Image 1: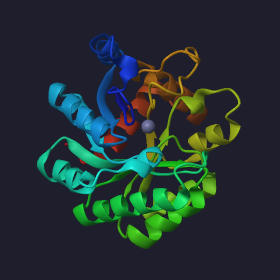
Image 2: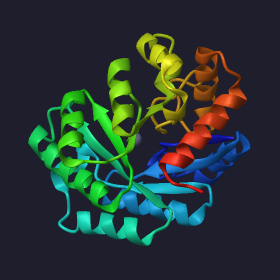
Image 3: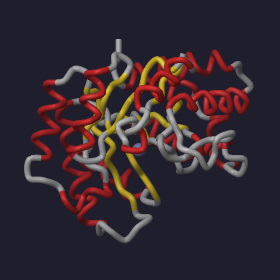
Image 4: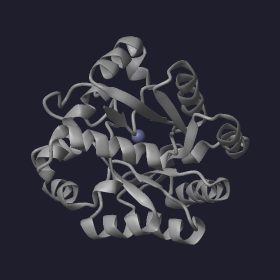
Amino acid sequence: MLFDTHCHINDEAFAEDRQEMLERAFAAGVEYMLCPGTNLETSASAVQLAHEYTQVYAAVGIHPEDAASVPAEAFSQIRRWIVEEPKVVAIGEVGLDYHWPEPVRQVQQEVFIEQVELAAELDVPLVIHDREAHGDVVDILRRYGKGCRGIFHCYSGSFEMAKELIKMGFYIGFGGTTVFPKSHKLKDIAARLQADRILLETDCPYLTPPPYRGKRNEPAYVRFVAKEIARLRGRDEEAVQQMTMENGKRIFSIP
Ligand SMILES: [Zn+2]
C-alpha cells in the first residue's frame, strides 16, 4: 500500500477525469494521499477533496509563487482550517522559490515566516517547497520555527543537508525526479538516507517519472518511485511501501 504525500489532485489538469484518476490510484494501491494548497482557493479545494474521499488528507497554505497577492484574511483562514478540520494535517505548501525573480525574495520570506510561526504555535507539520533557496529556508526554520517538524518535498539538497534537516525534525520527500536516469545525486541520497525519514510523492500533475515522463503525472505513478527506491536500497518493493506508509502516517499524525 502506498502513501502519495504530495499530490495536487485538486489541480485543473484533472478537471475532466478526477474521479477516474483517483480510481486508478486506488487500483494501484494508493491508500493515502496528501493534497497541499498553494493559495486560499486551492487550499479550499484540497479541504473539499478531503471531505469527499476518506483516502485524501489536506494541507493548507500560501506557496511562495503566490506570496505577492495574499488576501488579508489568509492567515486567520489557514488557522481556522487547522483548528476546525480534522483532515487538515499540515501547513503547506510553503517556502521559498528563488528560481524566478518574482515575487521578490523579501515578500516570499515574510509570507513564509508568518506560516512557520503559525506551524510552531499550532504544533502542526510544515510541507516545505525549497527551490534554489536552501540557506534561507533553513535559516528561517531555525530562527522562527523552534520545534517545527515537517517535510522537504521534492528534495533537491545535499546528503549532508538532509542529515541536518532530519536532526531538526524533518522528513525527506522523493518523487518522480528520483526515477530520472540522470538524477545521480538524488539516487545516492535515496539509497543512503535513514529509512524512517523517507517519504514518497508524485507532485502531480508535474514531474512525471518514467515510463510516463512527458505526460501528465498522477498518484498511481507513485509506485514507480517506490520501485526505484527499493532498487536503490536493495529492498523489496513491499518493504519500501510499508516503511514509507508508516513514515507518512507518523509525520501527519494519521492513526
Ligand atoms: Zn507541490
